[in-house]
Length: 215
Image (cartoon, rainbow, N blue to C red; front, side, top):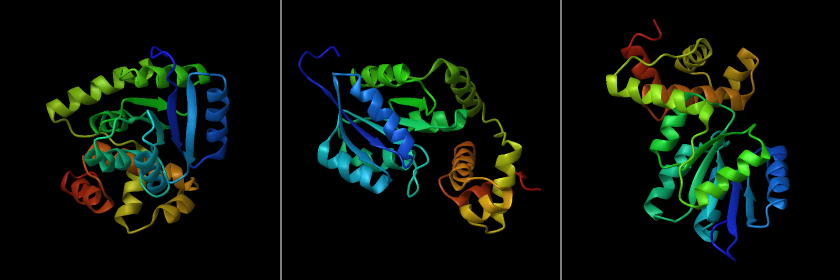
């Protein structure tokens, strides 16, 4: 780190034990980095970020109780110095856009190497914003599409999840119907929200009907 004698304090919010372990192993190789808290729920992340005020927080996009973008939004009134890195299995361009627009200082794939993870944390702690090269083109396309007011393009799976949502099915019910994990279903829903510019199920269904996406 560029600040001599100061360790970067890191909080991790993720509900997958293996990811926690991977981050802990990476941190153990970086003497400039200190892991101050590991939590599994967004509500706990909010409490611990406000209490500990870490330099950097790694926050999973698909936390069970609230998504990572909601965490960003709820932290805004606190005006803390903590810089948030969103981590996700999805590289959907709409979600990358939403995360950065909400204040994330980086968006990182959960399969990133330890080297990439540590370099991202270090850059973010210095005040930089980090978008991996693999996501930059998609983010640029998303910005252009939003400026042009283009119709959002939902994938076949996103449309399928949205249709079941419109039928009143819950995420666990959709997961069972489509033989998917609940977290995967929630990720698809978050992608749909981002593409439609909404923040909840009811609004997503209403916008989709109005635009003829469920016809």
